Image 1 (cartoon, rainbow, N blue to C red):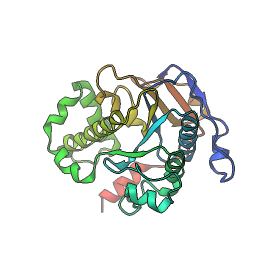
Image 2: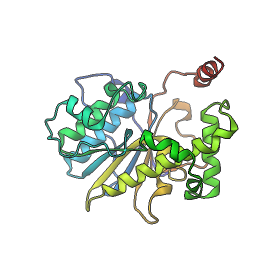
Image 3: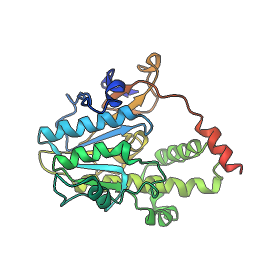
Image 4: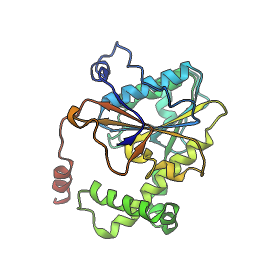
Length: 272
């Protein structure tokens, strides 16, 4: 990982599993001030959501947090106007956070504490992801191919191919890549619209979405200041190893997750 600073988050695993203990204080020194902080995650690492909640609280306590933007919510959905004491049901309704709609991928039990930390602090939570209704038009929008440099487009296509374990028909690679580009662009638009002088907009998304050379930063206006943090769950022996071609301002490292063969499950489903 070509980054300025790698931070070992040792106590996160214990704290994330304890309902009464506060999450650890993330190291934001050197990242602030910035108008836009892009915080990546591995979706299956609860330690990362604990760090996100702690980041929200720290920024809010300092009066720095302008808004929380989430990949997990569709663009246009927001908690703006809700009081800090709003119930979780009201917050979920405002964000249209329905477990069935999200196919269980964005469980409220996982991300609810992050969302509610912002709401309780009086900070608006904004959906940043491309609305489902816009996905099919995006697949057919060839103009999206030109929104990033050719080498980035090719890398995105390879990522789509690899992410689907090589079972996605070749004819679907370009359309699926356009959805990814449209999602990154939507998150960039939402985050920049929420910018406020002297404060920070916090965007939370998967690591691939916040990569400076590949994701949301590619869709920001040239010269738009921002900082990028990637969160990785990895073995101690590999925590200091660089990943070629990836740049970040900070790397937060947490204990590794149990190994899962996602490709085996995907190939099993596609063979049915």
